[in-house]
Length: 226
Image (cartoon, rainbow, N blue to C red; front, side, top):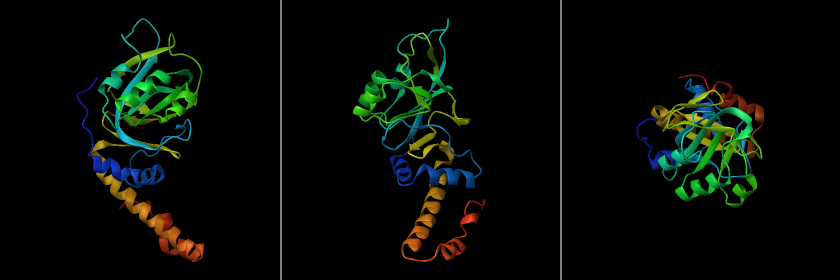
């Protein structure tokens, strides 16, 4: 477990809400950082989430057993707007998030959960409209299958390193991880790319031929490093 999280400003989080994970992934590419996470998707048509990560690492069930309910420590460490990030090594044959945790997270004001693994109780989670992003859905209980190994520690999502307080963003396109110390820079570049693409769309909608828009935009050079 690490020290207390250092959370970004509300203004920074609001800025990321104005762009998509595609814009952010492109910005990360342009800046030479790890870009999007493949294979983690919304489990239903849930809301976009952006917030600082509160992390949890899952380990197999065995003699080393933490006390209490799986996820309780991460929930206790969370504040409104946080995103709980669960590293279960991409396993889709076991569950690590369900109905009870979703109700508790919503009560705590957690923005959503992003899981490198599977969840269950999606029907109930959808009814209460709590955002869950994961690799899959299973009906199995976590009991006798897995336990919490640690929390507020460095974990991974699909090969991307996630540290407590890094910004995690998830929408219908997927998931990106933004290093906390580069967040303002990533947001600035994301907005620049968003604005350039919006101008291309505006020109196309006004009837300008694609060949002309493409030539003038320098689209294929947009991600060249400055």
